[in-house]
Image (cartoon, rainbow, N blue to C red; front, side):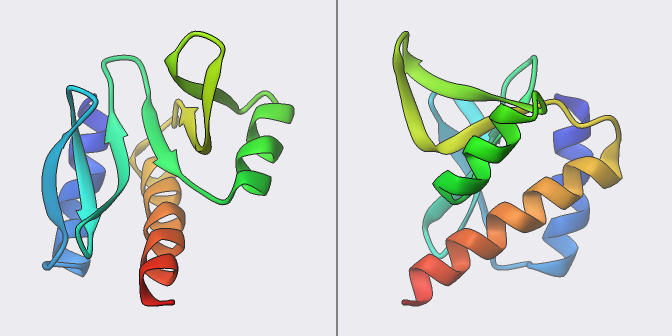
Length: 104
């Protein structure tokens, strides 16, 4: 997804230590060796607290991320940002969550 690539480009300037890699056959980004987002052709998938995932899904803004039908990943949600700024907001939120988890 082009928005993801543009947003990761901006984020890479802010956090040059973050790495790119493949997650579930998709391009992703990680901090401290832990993935916080990846993209598919249809959407961006970000790691957030389970409560936030439920909030986004409940509001109709996000969709569960399932590696197999009927088996959602509790802390991952699919979103379709409208623009680069929206994508950056999700990526920053996800990065903050993962970075805080790694620090504790």
